[in-house]
Image 1: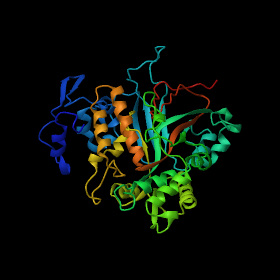
Image 2 (image 1 turned 30 degrees about the horizontal axis):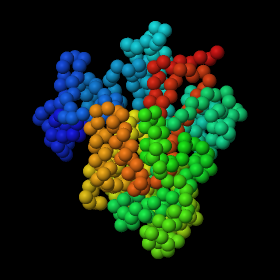
Image 3 (image 1 turned 120 degrees about the horizontal axis):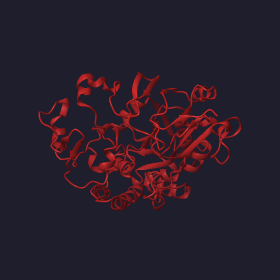
Image 4 (image 1 turned 90 degrees about the vertical axis):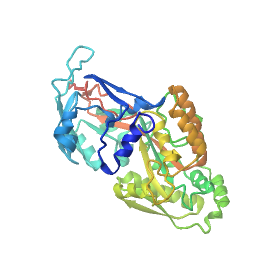
Length: 428
């Protein structure tokens, strides 16, 4: 809402350090029991999409007054299910809302399921084992080491003993990449960033390290190939070119890797996928640039603190869309939200990339009066950003679900937004 919703900036400033402002947000008006009016300061091409995010849902004031922060586990709403139980890091139980207003196309009262039991199983092998025993109806993402066993060669069908199940697979609104600290002494040099970008074999990572778990190699921009009205093929990124990599490395002052300083690749512990990819990157930089890097694997909380705090020169990161627009990915590179000092935290621009021309085009896209106009400016901005190589795009992810054969009518989408309202079981 910053610079968009009338009075939002003033309210935010007045709430500094947890203070409760003694005034309301000017641009939010309650018209009647069923109408909320929002007043903008200027046109916005993404505002409606932002209103569909969970943190902009309208909920009863009296619920917050009664539960306070406990509303997290006592959610009040009008959806097809209600939150019945939360056991942190173990499971969440949703039960059928008998008062739900929705009906399907045949007039059946929704939802059709009595309840949903969401379980948190950290080990993917254990999750797969529980699914095969019939204790789970659906699993999301496949264990990397089992993909070859589970999928046919084309990757579009299940093989062997898994053929009795159903597979849903499609591009995900998510991009996996490595980031440089663009304002560090080392990676402020665009030549070095380009050297690293040309030295990575993305195809090898996708096919042999991930066993085809991703959708496609990151040869284009930061925006994934999930938008019909935004063609990322128009954005020329980086593919493996060892000659170009060595050329730019020499141009940066490190011919054949000579005198290259000690470098650490920071990544978060999160299963074997992150580590396996990092080990492959380590090998490729050694083989193609004669550069040695160390791996530093830490818990996510520490990793997050390090990259926001400017403590990592080279780090692993990924981005899953908060809302279905290119803006949500290009937001990561908006330079006007980067602090002047490396001592200050920078979010969401972890890379601390700054380019005035990019910022102008990004702002023009935000202020556009149509999606078409916005996409034109976003595309121009993204081309500039990719040319500057502030990050290494590794691959674009894909959603993969395996469902028991009796699970019916469970739609899939690139944001993995799960609509259970019309799901039912058919055991015939």
